[in-house]
Amino acid sequence: MDLFLKLLFKEINQLNQQDYPWLDHKKLKNIQGLLGMFPQGLRNRKSSLHLSASAFVLNDNRAYFMRFLYRNKYS
Image (cartoon, rainbow, N blue to C red; front, side):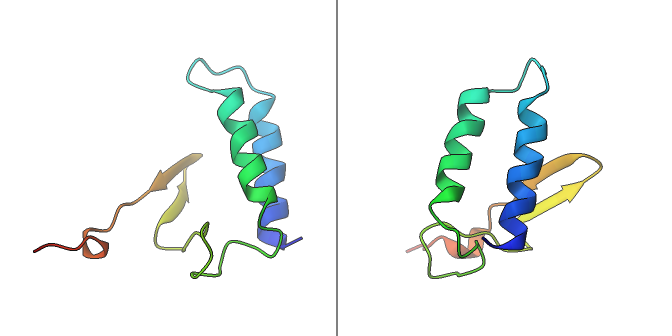
């Protein structure tokens, strides 16, 4: 398994042990299931599930996902 995925699973497992009011354990389980379908990693941009360093940022114990407008097609 990809080293980055191993780290993600470890962090999700730690998060799953917390009892934050905003935390949805079912969603964490779903995320783990999706990640488990891609043991080769999440860096293949041609894969149906992938992350790029510019789209996923960890900062001060917070995770940010960014939506890039240039990916949308306008007519």
